[in-house]
Length: 403
Image (cartoon, rainbow, N blue to C red; front, side):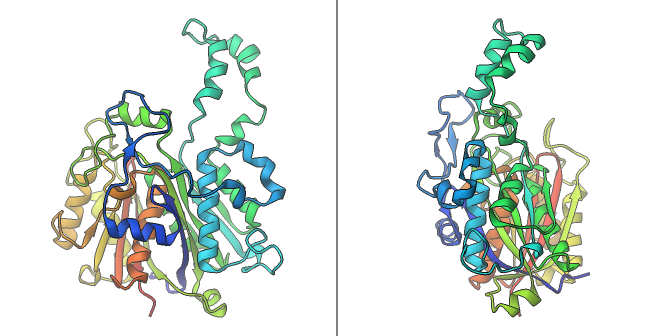
């Protein structure tokens, strides 16, 4: 059934374009890749040294974390830091109030009614930290388990693992902003943050929260992550629908998913309505030859999202799709053509990953944020947003202009 009571009132994107809705909007309007030769972990000898990095001056983590929580900065990996920056930006964009953004005012919504659903990747450990321990445990290149337990682990801080557990971005976000409503973490590759948005929509729809912080971020320019993409032949020049692989990026977005009743009561600006959601799974992995062009799972998820929204293909003004080059772009293109009859280069198809790169678990939220911007700026009335992940997961949203 269509979602009649769920709206988006704020977005907090972060990536190679910087931080905030205006920064993403400007980047999308320019429609130019932000990939540059990597400055972080350069010289790895991979298929490409290009990366979409978050500019160093985009935010200062100390500015988005209250003094009471700043000791925790030492156990924050880049994924956690970008999630906190995106959340702060989204809350301010929606004109909500939390104990951190407005410490001297009553929070809006009630902290017990503020949920958090975030997508996260399998966060890779810092190479220098782990390398120091491994050199002790594997002096000859072969890991000695006994030495790892007796000497190697002694090189790691007792709090080391708290940097890298996938649920830690949501953990820090909920602590910093006092969100005590339903909380969850999705680890489904590029699809994770869009699935988090669909979960938030259901949480709000059934009345378990007035608003949710929903989205996700990931650091895909980490050397281990980049090596993984290189070895699986998923890294390339980032040309949509060409199966060349997307340039790795870092960042993502957090969106404010809110009930229409709560948003109206506080006189909030409604950027878009969430009217349809769907998720699914392909039986094919994007590795080992990729996904067949006519894989029916792609079209199925898109069609079910439209069915959930109660709309037909004629009602869709634009499709914003991941096109992240994970050996499935041709299947995305085929599904769009079979459902809507649009060719790959149709101007009604937007592929924003070519601008900010494949940000892993943050990609779905950036696709959703791009859709929200198109609607809120009056460029489309109804958008189908779709993302697929390297494990074959899919998620789709139908977003509409506010009546």
